[in-house]
Image 1 (cartoon, rainbow, N blue to C red):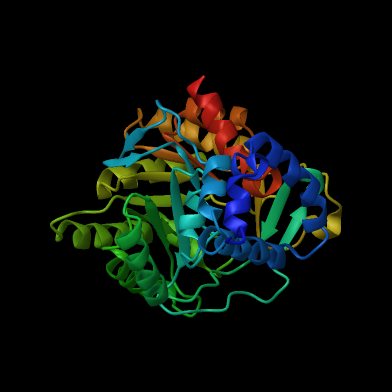
Image 2: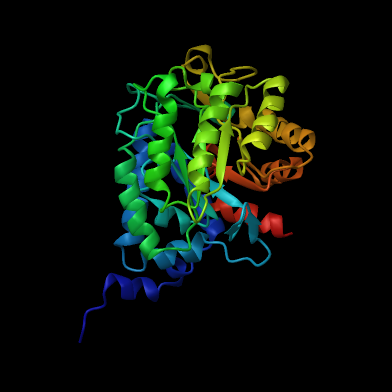
Length: 369
């Protein structure tokens, strides 16, 4: 008689095969204090590597993940800038910088995954430590510095993914190498754009990270128009064009936001992602030494400003273009606020870390109601 395998045991063990996402969310809250005792960057890779292993190698791993977290709710589908999304909740760039974990993360219920930021050449990023938790503010500070393995590695990985899982919507967030001067930055964006064109569904031009010296200067009107117009010219030469979005900082003034509205109209890009991390440190409960670490702040402290930017862009442009809202989404209520302000889709990052994977389904269920 054949000895039962691990897979057989899991199949006949309902508490594992039909795991309830609320139960797992509670489990995450029990495990999170242990994770938070260790370096956040180390924990990040520890968790995503094991998620990938569980998804790819463990008997019934995919089944367990999907049955526990994946979202199969009618009425959530949306079509935005010509792309059909199974639900409006995506994963923001920065979580999967090299496109290594897309399938496993998609099985957690995300409607789309944005990978990167990727640069033409590989680069190690800034010195460690470069990510810091602010638990009292439910926030993160990071100064990663576009650490990635380069666009060639990502392109090949995404080519294999698209062959096997063509239904997963993937966005490519592109940037410039640290060593590239701003006057040559357009060439870096061109290289990433051309290399990823056949393997992503949309592009995001990242000129708003505070962690690459001088990068935010590219948000000024003339250099930004040059980059976007150049990419659009290449885009229109193809038989199939890809939506190009611009990711902006929450620290822009109203006058700069007015410029952004003009730039979208002039360059005819598909939309805006609002917002990236902030350099502001106002009204934080965290002790001075930690909150003054250099880098971009994300999480709950950026929630209100992000929503203000979305609302401003949406109203001043008369909803002329789609907006993806990101920044401080830790609950279904936070996501609804972004959508009410004018966002068509939302993305998670810091809230996903603090609240766990159950947050995706929680948001989707609330949106249906």
